[in-house]
Length: 352
Ligand SMILES: [Zn+2]
Image (cartoon, rainbow, N blue to C red; front, side):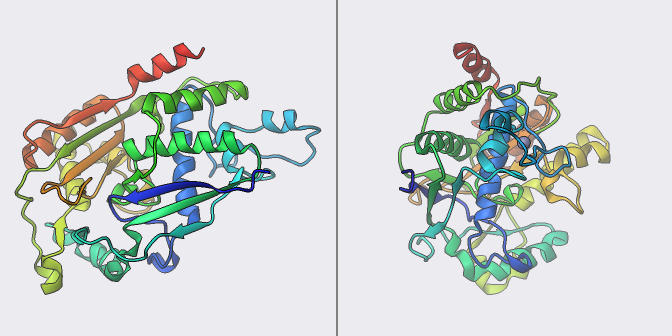
């Protein structure tokens, strides 16, 4: 029982980065995929008012093996550890990955990054250019999940979190550099229903509640700006890319991030505050609270590209971002703005 895989078919809208040896993405690593799903589950659970541990800290949930029954075991776990595992507790599922058709999708070539900023050149050639031949990881992907127990429950929780990720975030590592936007190819849940599915699960299992401090990554301070980019793509200095690059490169998330960081620094005047929002320029790249997608097309027949920017900050930051994007990327002031505020209180009220 429970051995039939649950399959989620995924179409990537921007290339997927799941980590690899030596900074090069040599194959799809499932840890990068699972890590991002767990990360989003934490964000959602926090937004719904539940306690989630920091899995990288010493205070993370742990089981000693001396717990007398499953009730005691579960009482020591936050919902993320319960589903995704921790010391002394196995993850509820396995995720052997298979990739469909290992060739680039035609018409999707212009997905690499270019930059107007010469400082970024080294980073780009190091990280991205040498992966030019590895564009295989752009296309479709099957997540085949092997549940360890309660198949139905795991399927529902994963479908709900993946549905939210496809609309509001990304899959895999390096989301701040534009990787991993995706669509679920099969039916996905509506956002509100996804939240309800997760909220009911957390409630039924009596996980510990905690008021949100609003400082961390939580749906409570999430916002998203999604917009079509003007027809003429922003100018970029593509010289260094040489001949091969010019047809296939357009300026993307790295440039947008650079512009936004500069804009924010100009407005707030504090380097420290800017680093808190956009992450340190050295060290932990995950520290950024603002994420910028690569330009993408939902449908390759579309002439225009889309851009998704999302963040976990005070509302004022999103306003600065929105104004800068509308100004520099010809979005005709049509940028869609989204936040979860109302939906979260509705969901927690309906099911309380
Ligand atoms: Zn935990």
